[in-house]
Length: 279
Image (tube, rainbow, N blue to C red; front, top):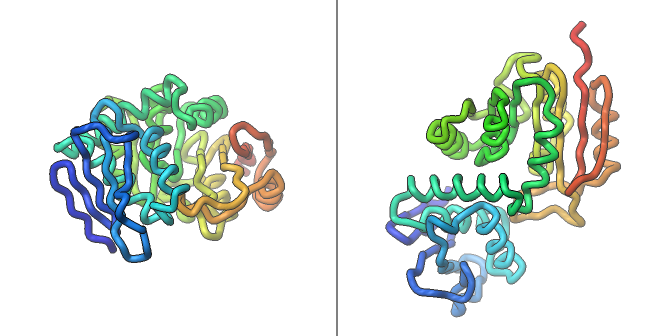
């Protein structure tokens, strides 16, 4: 496990060193020009993100440029750099996370985030009044569903992500209950929520996708909503393991026990499964 160090304006973990600069630099993020980024060598990132500008979409856009240039390689590098950018945008980590959540939610609500259309479509597919988001990560979708009036639960395998979501939900006054949970063994009773969502989750599972879908169908009373990215090859920096196509969704639907399936494309692929009636 990588050891992280944090001091005002500086963060280092997994061979990634991040520092906030107070003077202008060319773009929000720069890479140390003297580093050749050989295996085992630290990558030094400097940036000018502050509380007014840090957000999920802005951060990811800059990190993808570093992936394309070869400065970052793999999921561990990407996540360490992302965490470093957030935690160094101000001297108080709590204020950093607050700004990150507020700015990211504002981007999603106004449509300025590339992921806004995925959220919009997912919200339109929710059935009933209660929702469980599986693989919630930061929980932006869970928070938006709660803001829309749904009774929301969320789970993620990362304890840190769950704690961040619960803190954000409490601060924003939104009824989201998040807990640690594995998509392959959901800690919820049978038929306990109306809709279960798997939004950009299944591509992260190395195997047993069918089990994750079966677990979602077990917990849902009415519907399971699945969204996946279509990629030419899996994105290692995002931790993706599968190339998913419409044919993949057809295969998943054929192997699942459901009462009806709908497959369509909208900024990636969607599989909507109706839950069979309870005997």
